[in-house]
Image (spheres, each protein chain N blue to C red):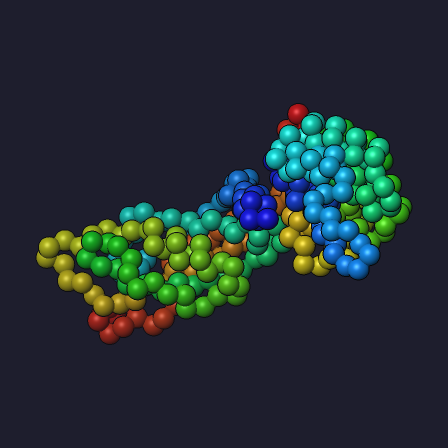
Length: 135
Length: 175
């Protein structure tokens, strides 16, 4: 029985891990925080949200330390909890330009809003995907 | 897509379970009643689709009673789907649903068959019927996602908005 449970758990997990990446587009609006972004990581669209055609928005606030790393990350507002974890991960993986020795660290919270949306794909692209699948 | 179909079909197998009966006037039986059906289901779940189909067909020949026949046909529906023999899969799916119109797993598998045959309206009807019977099924949600990807595909679009929404603090605002 335990063997079957393990097998089923593996099978259940695999589609999530092996899901198609899809074509992710990320657009960044206005980087004018008080610190210059060095690396901005886009969150991964959650598989179940994409599957169920769920869209949403998450605002994450955080501190930036002298080295440009994000600290004390917290969700300030979100329309759906599904999107919170990938948003936190994305902020955690993002970095900002480190401060110079003569610069003073300002105790200001930065916030970043992620908007997760799904756009219809034109029929032409859809049919070419179908053909690829059939091949 | 193919990998998802395989996994979903496997998850929707009507596996024949071991059972034990112990009561007055009855003998205790431990283990599967129809070993071919049982081994066939195991082979299908292990990914050996052709062997799974072969064993399940043998099991179906030796099936006793409606329940075993239903399990045999349901697993052949999944098995032939896995080996991409869609017409044969459809025949077995139809057999099950003619005899048991409440078998949500077969609606799940037949919906995949219809999707692969590009019979989208029938696929949608089976997904809806399956979800009426088992609204919480993750398998059916996955199949519905595959159906939506076929009929109305979408592209993920993420906006990262760093615009400040709070008023600037006095330290930052020189005015």
